[in-house]
Image (cartoon, rainbow, N blue to C red; front, side, top):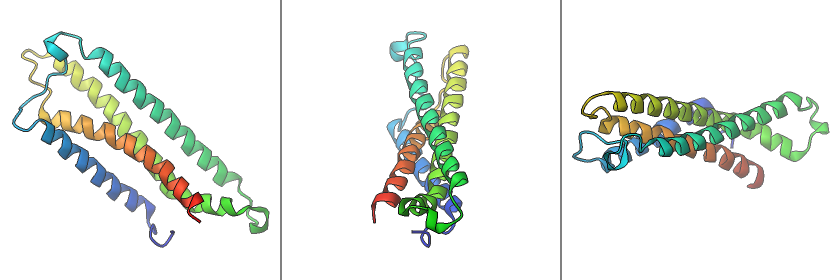
Length: 168
């Protein structure tokens, strides 16, 4: 396991770029031919705000869980005994998986924070510009890519921990 992930930071970053690119392309494909996207459903001013609240609440929940999970893994690493005889077999497995898991959770948090910040900013720009053509297909695709990448990397962090602990 460790030989495959010799440099977990590079692995996580390259993986993030791949996942992000996939969701960005998916977002752009959804709007093929469209120059902009309307936030508010049916053209009703403020119709997106309840949806935005739900999206942001999910992002906040995942951010909270990811940061708590990172804190748990850090706490575990700090408290492990330097003596190998005082440790159980799963502590060695968790120690080996910690770098990739922490990287996954960190990328998840950064991606979801970017999602929340940019979605809020772009919605404000959208609401205050005349013609409401400010939410371009590029911005829509970035929003989709940040949001779904954050969710995927959160799940990947737990998937990695589960695989590392229970695959033996």
